[in-house]
Length: 190
Image: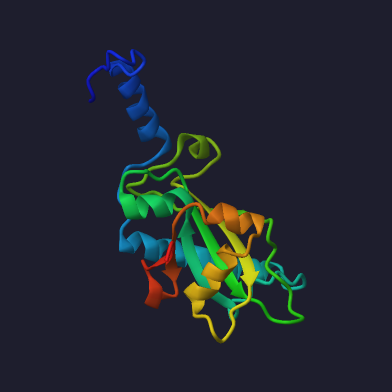
């Protein structure tokens, strides 16, 4: 615990106690390990496959053949790198290859998956909604993967494109969790 600060009376022992309680209830301080990235990848790919099976007549753009990369994003990606931010939830972004004349991934959709019981616990807000573990938010985009770009290069180009969601996503790191050959690699910042 930090000592009180006479120049900032609000930063007393009670302040630090409240901050610690909030961190422990909303954000898990547990480190994200490579095995956790593998589990996140498996859960996201299972969800995307089930989405394609459940909506066979409605082209979703979620074709597993076009899935190039899944990345951990936002606060959890920052926590993977700095081990200080804490995990409120896991934001995952799936990037699909753009194919002329084929449907695009629904870009405004967010699907929620339960990580399940783990050392990360559950966010109390999500626990009250039936989650047994941390919530996983799965989002996606269909982007061009040209022959001159590798997967990470294509994603970086999209992040620099100026699109609103790309600008928002570029404010925090992106860590590859799929394909397995890129597991744990930093996509952004390069």
